Image (tube, rainbow, N blue to C red; front, side, top):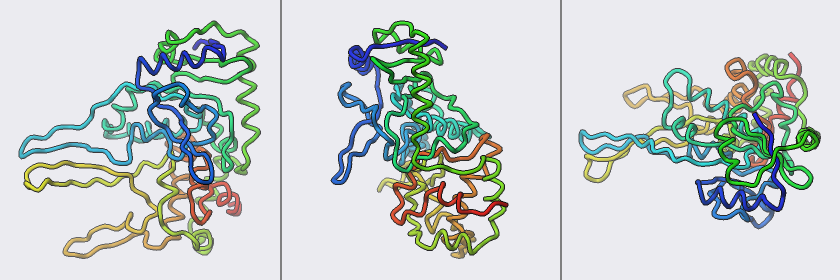
Length: 346
């Protein structure tokens, strides 16, 4: 680990040289009628990079686990894989999204490794950037604080006069050659630490309790059906909360054929446990069963997954407090802080 400093006037040249050398993905503005929103996209120039973003519409997991991904192609008896990772720099990721990537890494590594995800993930260099503007629905400062981000290669923090660049891995160290960096002074390092601490006090929402106490009370509420019915009464089962979530990783796999009926492929697409068909299975002979038929059951399942079921495996809740689900929910009922805070103590 080493600390470096780059002056503000040298920063654009650093990013420009990085873009000339590598594929760089970063947050860029996407203007809507009502407000400015942000997405992760390939940068063509340093002026596109917006490190002052609050949150992106979709999390950066889409770079490794895209919404639609071919797994294999076949032509008669010939079958070929579709894993073609591209080296890229994922630049300007907030720390909570790196925590979500760490969780996805764990889940896609256990048992049978998912090379369609991991090959892309391992080819990437990830640079965290300090949060400069907080999303209006964020509560990342009060959830899972016992779990620290670990999958990044460098951490960039904006301070007075420039940026402190903390190189964490050899891949993070390798990016230094693209800019005019100097060794960071102790006051600059302290300034970076203070900037990251100060911004955490600006989260507009707060989840009460500890990860353990919340997991306990959410589990204890499993059988309180009237509670989940009340929470889910305005749910459209649209799955928007799942779609924007950085830790959701369920997918559907389908085979398809060209018109020759001899060639085709196998493709996976993101799936959502809030949608009505997610838990529907075939029993054969035209029969079927849906083991989470009611929307209250699906709503409850989401919160069990986020706050309780995966805690032991991940070291904390499967939610990082980004607030994307709250912002995406048409009925505004998906906010984990609001729901979990409303559940009585066990």
